[in-house]
Length: 216
Image 1 (tube, rainbow, N blue to C red):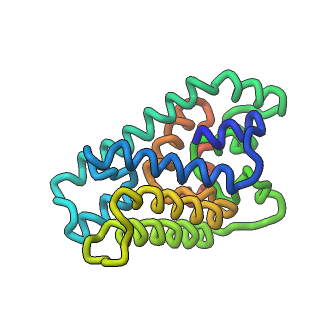
Image 2 (tube, helix red, strand yellow):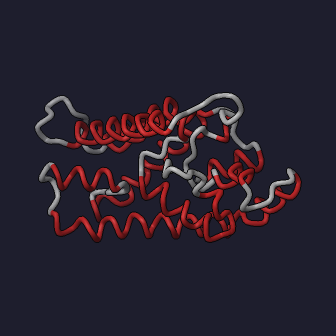
Image 3 (tube, rainbow, N blue to C red):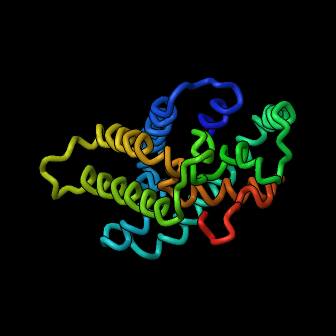
């Protein structure tokens, strides 16, 4: 989310691929940092899939989900502490009233929106709720499928364990590069919902949940 913040506020990165690469590298590093503790369960979709496939005990699921959603909320708080002054200045310069529909342009730092306001798709290009749902479903399925493929011992063609986090990160980079123009590519309900809830509490209010039909 920090990569989105610095791109929007300071134009630090140019083009979607740079942001996608930052996400992919970040996830790869997070896997290396946490896989000896929790098998690097960073995404509720992965944890639920692992339980469904019998690769994780169901009794662990609640604590994993709690950790994922709480961690994402704390990360959103830290991000806001770092950039709150810059966000306020950006809103002032551009005449954005936080909490108004127009403040989706800054709320996008925290949550995922469709059409992606960061690429100007809100101006003439329509992304329907079903289109957004399908994009996120395909992207999340592809990610979980590749994680299973790269970590299942029965897959004799898989990479060495020391390299699998890098290729999971590359998978995320590719998926974001394709899906993000539509929905900002959430792929992870904790990454989307917890920061979005924080944005709601931090003054964005309805702009954090702009859909009257629960599209978020």
